[in-house]
Amino acid sequence: MNMNGNIEGDLNRKMSTEAVHAGEMHDPSGSHIDPIHMTSTYVFENAEAIRSWGSGETEAHVYSRVGNPNRESLARKLAALEGFGMEESVAAEIFASGMGAVTSSLLGLAGSGDHIVAQSVLYGTTNHLVQEVLPNYGITTSRVPLLEPTLLEAELALNPNTKIVYVETPANPTMSVIDIAKTAEIAHSHGASVVVDNTFATPVLQRPLALGADVVVHSTTKFINGHGTVIGGALVSRDPDFIENGGGALVRYMGAVPSPLDCWLTSIGLKTLPLRMREHCANARALAEFLESHQKIRTTYWPGLESHPQHLLASRQMDDFGAMISIELGDFGTASRFMDGLSMSSLAVSLGNVDTLVQHPASMTHRLMSPEDRHAVGITDGMIRISVGIEASEDIIADFDRALAGL
Ligand SMILES: *Cc1c(COP(=O)(O)O)cnc(C)c1O
Image (cartoon, rainbow, N blue to C red; front, side, top):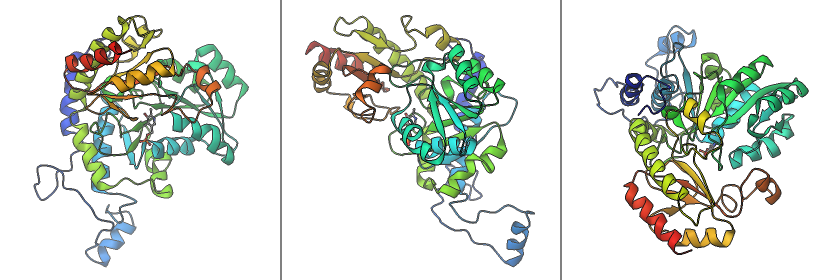
């Protein structure tokens, strides 16, 4: 689908072809589907093979922490999608978790004495990492609400040691949208790199590298795998050296290495990402419109609604609006009764699965934040977050309708 004309319709349809075919291994056995290389080490035929690998004349797999065919094949497929439509080539590395990739992106670009500027609301664990962990290693972080351009300029001028501007868009859980191109322009004029967590949008809806970002991180646990079977992450960059020797190389030095089986499952999932995202987005639109018109709901947060504060920016920056919706029900008691009234949707953290997942940010994903910090970024006790699945939209709406009728 090409709702907003960001990318030519024909080109966008070709993304489906790319998702199916890019990066495949074409194993010498002739196996149609990539085999799973569950091996820790690799055999050299003789001493001459070792010598020519050691001198850089030939390439070889040596040890699976350093490289594995399933990890490489998934990295090629994801790089093809994040770099889709770009002239430059794009490279990726795969990690054992999204947090492995987030940590490696930050430690690959910043060291002791350096500074990060981030938006105020971040994925809960990323928030904990920059607030509580990185300061122990001499890396500080300050916040700018929604990276608003004038405030961002001022913050960067105040902190000339800033190496990274860190972006999550759409942002959890209010689905606020941040202007990637504008942020990159400002960050670059101050010598800082831009890292974008593209987990919510996926490359099907938004390609930050084409908009000027330097590094993209993913929790592949979510839409990219899509079936809830794996914890995984990825780092993608326009700079092959950053993947081979910078942040990407931290996968082997810090050991956040994914299992070949997990990479294989994620590759299989990635093949249907464009197809799934079309269905996820269409269902999200149907559900968001239903929720917005429902009298028991105070606010519905979805970037595709005209009432969303950054709807125009989202229309420009994204090819569709994603499948993450939040609603405001007023207080914790009402939110609890609503959750207990659902029957088809599951009460679970995580997102991006084929089935609809519902969670309560204040007591689940964002429970580590203080109530004051939560309220400052709009996470109220009455807020519910929904990851809309690919079930029939009528069935999703009926499930919500019943739960709301019980309030
Ligand atoms: C889940 C998630 C992460 C962390 O990924 P894990 O795979 O759980 O380590 C980071 N950012 C966002 C936006 C996420 O949703």
